[in-house]
Length: 266
Image (cartoon, rainbow, N blue to C red; front, side, top):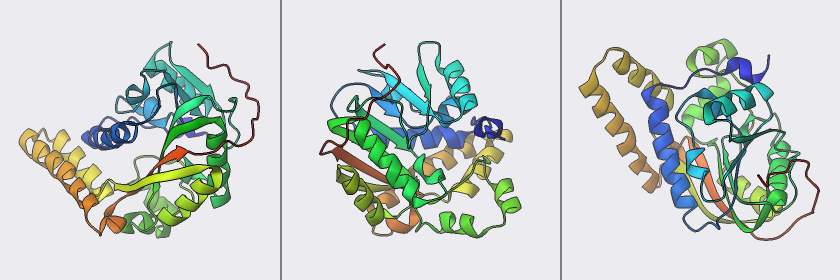
């Protein structure tokens, strides 16, 4: 069964709030980024519903989306429109020439591998295709977050009932391990943040219940609470409360000049 067979529509209020929080972080991270085409390392959000980030990356240079699963790629392209450039490929072996992307955004893509070594291999490939001085925005599951830790301990059948999606959840790294991998790949880490501080799985269920019950006032109040809880990202406890670790890094040196196979000059 491929990943495309596990895609479930992301239409609930939670996904809209998640998009707002991550979209704000993307805007901050790209404020000083060079202009040009942006690469996004997976298309699962774009394939799942309207709450994705292709629009955050569409200007001024355009957007290229990559996904390993052809079914996800097709679904994303159908949602984004015929003009969208969606490419099938493995982030560990990117089908692009060196130095062609000033901007790379990787949202919880690299924490779906079985081994940490695959995270490093992916970062080296991202550095290869990124132009010098470009910005990488990277998020991974935060291993110090109790909810993430609990997920690793639960039996598979319980986890499948709790989660919104059923694709494989793999290894991740902490802030310092991520910094080391990024620096070894040719990046300079500019800042590290922690995102999504509400207790994620209960929040998803509560918001769904309020929406289905058409409890508009309570739903609006609950949404304000979710957004307000992001203020925990300013406290020392953010290392525990943040569901995602988020790095903003600058490409600081060139690596090998491997040849790509996909023409993105469209």
